[in-house]
Length: 474
Image 1 (cartoon, one colour):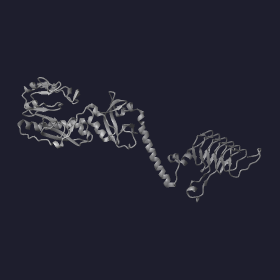
Image 2 (cartoon, rainbow, N blue to C red):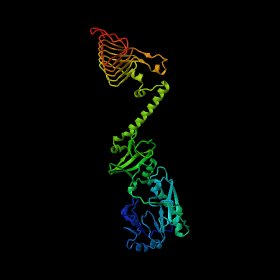
Image 3 (cartoon, helix red, strand yellow):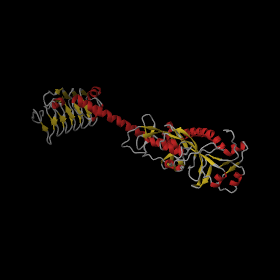
Image 4 (cartoon, one colour):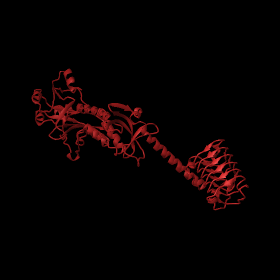
């Protein structure tokens, strides 16, 4: 940048890492540029600051340059009074002073959700960014700005500001404006440890926190197995997380990984963990299948929604309440599709409805419901376990009509040589073949065929039951 009537008489610069009063262990300037190398290319005198501006001989060397003003940019140290008495010092600060005085103004502006910022040229005094203003340039902060994109535009505004104001400072025509101290907010300096994410914050705040500290800065981070995990890019997603744990990683049905926040969630797009960087498509290597709990939660939510819709439909259409499985799969459709062939098994606690045909040599597990309202036929040589319920009619309409409608009956038959376990309910209209055994405590509402036995303890036999000698049918 060349400005008429101005000449650089010398440069004082610093290494990328250096100690400073508020952090004796040292700081690293991530925006460091090799100013000394550039100065050497143009044969401009240079001094390197090692620890402080009180370095022996530094002031005397600079005084020999006979400066008319100092221009201070990207400088971490206070400009001592005797330097400012040698020549006025003008500094560039990346905010609209007096607001956001102090450290890391652009980082703080993004974190706090500001919609505009800027850069100020001011004359330095004994305070913190408190001297009179020589000029300012505004710059909007966009919703997707990172510290890198915003800083690039602020640098452009800074060049424009210097082109406008330095010639006026040089010729003495620029009028300085005092700062309004009532509007000053001083921001604290930041260090890498300040990038720890608080997941109880809302998702939008956390997304700003990540964007404010992404590259070239050290980055926002969380911990995984006590090790730092840096997050470089996120995306806000509106998610119902009233009962979820903040900081929990989940996987969506589209394969993205999210982290639950105090409100909503953020999608993780890029991280660094154990010195390796992972894109969104590589996150499975870090979070693995355990994050599939998010997909399970989504499926449960979908199932709950479907169940609620089905319950409402059945209630409005038939004024009924059904077992859970019958809301998900239509009972009559299931009955038509079931085909129990010869030698098959019907397992415990099954529900079988409609026009059902069970082949011979079949085992029917305990506590199975066989509702033969559409017709039920069980073949010969079957074993019907304890607690099975066999029905031959549909009495639901009869019950909800207050006994005004007629129950629907259909024939139900059980073949020869079947075993019917204890505590089985065999309702009226069910025909039982010869040679069958009916276990103790069964409820039988029909005649028992030749060769069949109904055991006691006691056997509750209701209906027209014929009892003869041992050699005769019972």
